Image 1 (tube, rainbow, N blue to C red):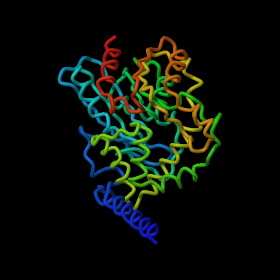
Image 2 (image 1 turned 180 degrees about the vertical axis):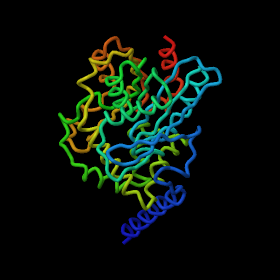
Image 3 (image 1 turned 180 degrees about the horizontal axis):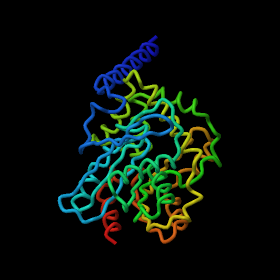
Image 4 (image 1 turned 90 degrees about the vertical axis):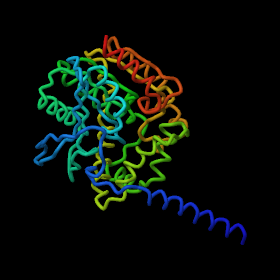
Length: 333
């Protein structure tokens, strides 16, 4: 009886904690209209796949422009807002910084149907640069943004002055190890997400179980969406982009990159898509960034590699100084 009472109390305490976290969450609009970005947001109208969409972006101009530009491409679980410190540091150095939210992310449109490809996202990004009359720029991509940055550099080498990949995913082909799951499977996974699950994933996957209060905002941005009655639309877009990532590897094309390239790699990172779907022995071979960084450097002609020991998937959040120093140094070369 005593054990039964203890279990009930433990369950109620856990429920109260989760409910309290949910109660502290801000309900977020599907396009984050009630969430303020660190800099002014503009919108580029796009007509794609027979529908009118809008692409949100920040275009931050320095006080003393050095004539050079850089585009920052966000990861899958993020949007342009998490580049705030990077934008500030780069504009101080005189760079014009363009930070788009890709279709399906952040403040951009969340279409009810969309065929996601990295080529299409690169095309959208090029359309944005054309609208701003930017002919040449550095391209920096983090996580999923690294796959997109790679595709952009391959499609538009004349535009890509320099390429910077910060803990990019897609340095290995997960299809060789992970069984394929259809979009519906990813969709059902997304529908189950809540504050507790999102924080647990980021705590374990990004920060090695070492949490800091400043990380809360990146959990709240995703968890706040789960309170929205239109969360199904967000979940569906997230599922579609998982399928894009899984089925459209860039790993076989690194040798064709012609732009000067810098890899910034937190070597503690173990990010890999589909880990829960494989056996323990297979899982141990996936997402080994300490090895993948070196392998990728050899594939990209004349690429530079900066390794950050003890840092995980988020160098520009977890160790900003270790990230931004090599970045600015590379841009000035």
